[in-house]
Amino acid sequence: MARNSLKDRRLVLVLHGPSLNLLGTREPEIYGRDTLGAINRRLVSSARAASVRLQAYQSNHEGELIDRVQRAAREGAAFIIINPAGYTHTSVALRDALAAVRIPFIEVHLSNIHAREPFRRQSLLAEIAVGTICGLGSRGYDLALAYALSRT
Ligand code: DQA
Image 1 (cartoon, rainbow, N blue to C red):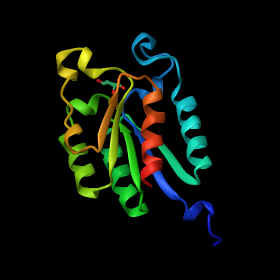
Image 2 (tube, protein in one colour):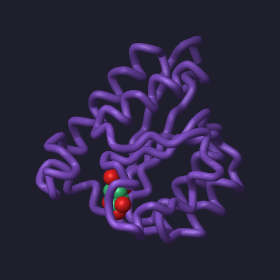
Image 3 (cartoon, rainbow, N blue to C red):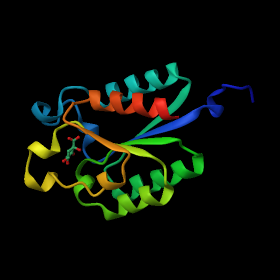
């Protein structure tokens, strides 16, 4: 296979948790009006410009997100950007999967989780993340990708 072909490119995985498939119409005053499709297209195009392969995956199911994290390890993914959505505050299992694969990741939230209900202030993942971006709307994903590209 020729150098720089799609398969040779480094892989960044973007994971979106529950109900992020509804972005655009889901509480737009909190989460903004960008759809998930629009966000993903923007990320794919920025990654492509840097000759990096980017795959985006959304699931409403904890186990499917965990399976995708484990698959990322088999695929040799260089970096993960994850918005765990509601699982941020509840999922020991997702944290364990991310810790197990040892792929560096950035946690992204569209809203400022520290300025909302008290139960959103705790993230079970933040402690093992490279960093967290929250409250910057969908730009948070672009900033996370810029960092990931500088590291891959
Ligand atoms: C969210 C914040 C979470 O508390 C919430 O459950 C989400 C979205 C965000 O992007 O702001 O679903 O992760």
